[in-house]
Image 1: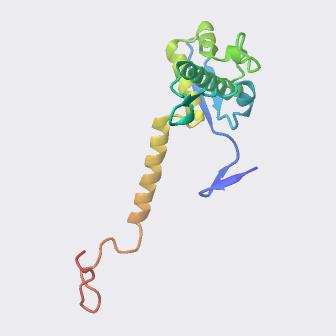
Image 2: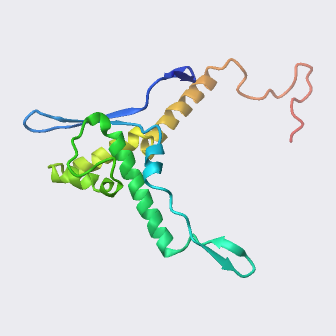
Image 3: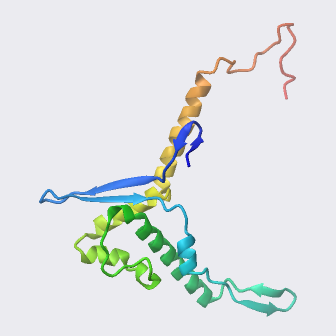
Length: 180
């Protein structure tokens, strides 16, 4: 299915390409594609539920400050990002040895497997940024897009044929504004 937004055709997920240069000339090409749905993740990893407690005067409330719940939510968030990263990197055709999309217990080891294969910390970090950019999670990229958009609005306003200031008087000679 194709969709247009502001005249621009949207017919495929966002992709980012990263080239990691190698001295021997066999550069590593990483392609990250936006994950369109997290339904697979949700099937494997249900979101933790905060425990409830009866509090006098307040009734049955969620205990979101519970240390065990906070730890479960941290683990949930780590697994969610790891799943998104692994799924995003599918176009790169990485042949994982330890990581499997069918096994949530392996997901958070994806960066370690990259490092064990010989990628440096810097290269691994660049891959993480590539994944975030493909999934529109990179704040610098979002800011840049906003700035370009807003700059276009300013240019459009400058080209407008309408008056840019309020006239002091009307054609009849009366003040155009009552001073408020």
